[in-house]
Image (cartoon, rainbow, N blue to C red; front, side, top):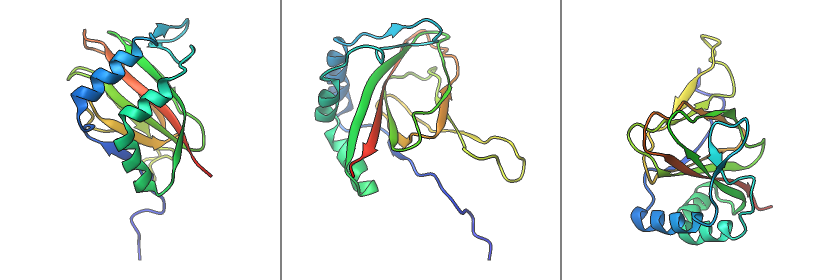
Length: 176
């Protein structure tokens, strides 16, 4: 008997966080203390290279409901290891990258309009028929939260909107 798959890669998605407008305002107000800066040899601005003390606790207070749902899905308690924001202006993009080999990585789409470039995900093995890399994306919008394994390579195409795109990114590990 032929089974459809030997392995699958699960992800978690909230199409839009509850009370989105309130949560967006709260996290945006907090992020004012952590401005994004474009580093040399990068194609986006971020605050990842700077002190973000207090951001983790603020994030957990605001998005506790979504994180609790995720923990229930995976039946494990998680620890937020790191959290930062990224800002893309017209033509900014992110090269293919991953966040490590164990744990989870998450995104919250804070500012994201219809012209914003999506996040693309590369399957970690070649297509069995074509021997090519399969690429997927999720239908996200402002207020979406996506969590996937850290090892999934992902990227964005150049941002085409004149409105900035801003995301909140976070890395997690399971409490042992």
